[in-house]
Image (cartoon, rainbow, N blue to C red; front, side):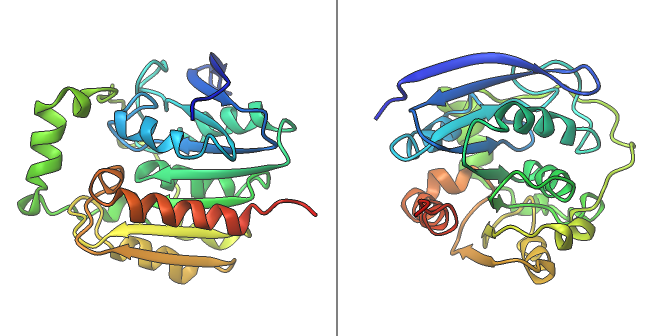
Length: 252
């Protein structure tokens, strides 16, 4: 299924960054927002493929964080990206009865921090999300050769929508592990057991501190973030669709 209407536009953040978005409109009363992770964008092949799975039941909204894709500015390593997500959610506010958010990696950290201060998202999915930026313990000797090198560097599909423009990394950062208890919506955590970038204990730590309805799925032999879409597509997409069916039910 393809979207009936696709709108491309730009949103202005509170600190004057231009955030480009793509809005797939299928005349639904619920929307799924997809927040990419570091070095990705809304144009990445795997994320575009993910979006299409939801067209039958939802509208879909995707955007580029600052310093990524076609958005302006420099990436601030989650220090300011909450303003980008806020701009997206402000644009959608009042247009839908219910909103679900799928957030990848550092995009998940941004989402937890942002949603701890607002209450207009009804369900959250965090994929390979760091609990604390300062405690990211990626293990370079366990580099995912097939995905991080072969797919990303040497295939046209893997290169699409990739890259970023770095900004200062020393700015103060909120810790998702300190904010997760402030969120009162259902949260699904998905993590690959063999994630070499963000170790699985991060999702476990966030899950343990979540006080709302929650679920944790560890995908056997699974890699990092969007690569779960590539390596375990059926299990990965099925888990998210089932979660939204449960947590974004039709109103009676």
